[in-house]
Image (tube, rainbow, N blue to C red):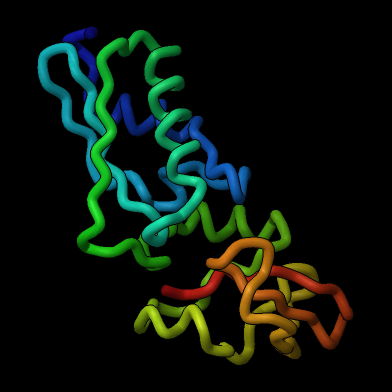
Length: 164
């Protein structure tokens, strides 16, 4: 491993690893990368899944290793930690903007509890027209961490990335 490599360099490399469920987000935007540990010729990436059992995490691990190997890191280790639990508070501001531009309403406000995954939030801003005249259609959207909403102003359906 290049001894001049820094943690910041590895974080920059990891910006190239996309979330397989929301490809406009990097794993850095998503906030699942908790730490990078450099020792000798080993790069260890510490991650926290968005929720326990998230099916995307296996693919994310594969992509992390492949991306690091493409950049010359042969020895890599992925460590998964579950505590503290991931929260939408860890999404970067850039990630929230990317969600909005992709047509997914980003989480609004701070996460309160995991029960928010199963509750309706009011005043969700439509990513198409910015109206708050919206209603939930289903507690679950294209993935378990999203709810399906409809804008009553522009009549477009959209996913909302639930706070948790």
